[in-house]
Length: 431
Image 1: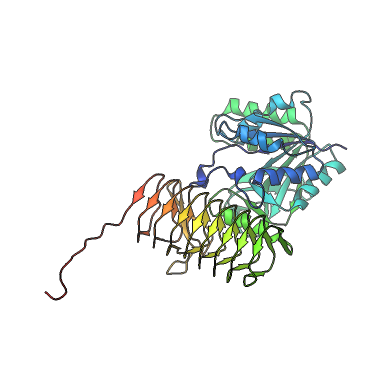
Image 2: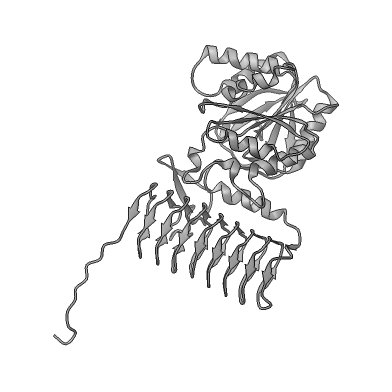
């Protein structure tokens, strides 16, 4: 039996990810996340796919998808971020040749083991007359949608953010959904938009109606699930991809000094240079043309193409994008966008004095990151001068400039310049 048509939601707004950019284009290895995901779907036997993008990323999505052999991909545009239901309605023209086809809905930013998709597909192929929703088993409370399930694993409803004491089950709704009739789903979503303009839960309301008319079954999943929604989630997704590295893969053109140390599960790409006294402690990924200078240390981290980890620098549990430059500094539990300059003596503080959970502001609201160690998130082409220190959970916007010796206690917006003014008193010491 042929697989359903794949629908990958890759549009929406990435405003919660500020100061980072498009989540589907973040790289966790040699390729952007979108390409990694599409390759996995192609390996599962999908042959038809529809990507839902936005006006800013649609052309990039087309270019990236064109490189996936064996997967015929169409890209549709959601002009405004009006919710998941509106995104699905935009796929209707791409499904017009076969409107009653089954569809498999996923989100590009949900990173799971391949076994999840294998299980959902297996359930559908075993009984294509039903629809299927993946449910992640969570003993701890998760602020998402919970599935209402009867004794036969039939789903009768979804309750959004019920609170820890009111959970109807331990199954959290994960967007790996198979609908056996796309036209019926899209018709009901459209009807829901006719009934109410807000909030953006028209897809969930449509499913609630359909669950009363037809069979929806849960597919239970107990493996890893990392949803890339907030800046600190980059570190979670990084850890997942690092965990998949097995052994040491060192490109023949990479230079490893005899006095350098390479240990654990490591990938070192083409043209990278690891100089004397440097150490790369796995799991770690070192991209193309990366320089790890004398006596530097990279551990449990990803360093992307052409970044420079200069003399005596430590990069620990951090994600460093391409073309970043560092020298004699400490990058701890942090995320750097492309082109960040982190000058000599800079440090990202990662631990509160009370050793409590580090909060981070998202769109003006302080949020619990769940991390006791969290450094800085620094946007593209920001320049931090010598001896700058960032406090735990601080974010710095694109093209911002932070002058020498500044201790950054609060977020810095795009293009802002922060300079510490000092008053010098000059006199003769013998006066």
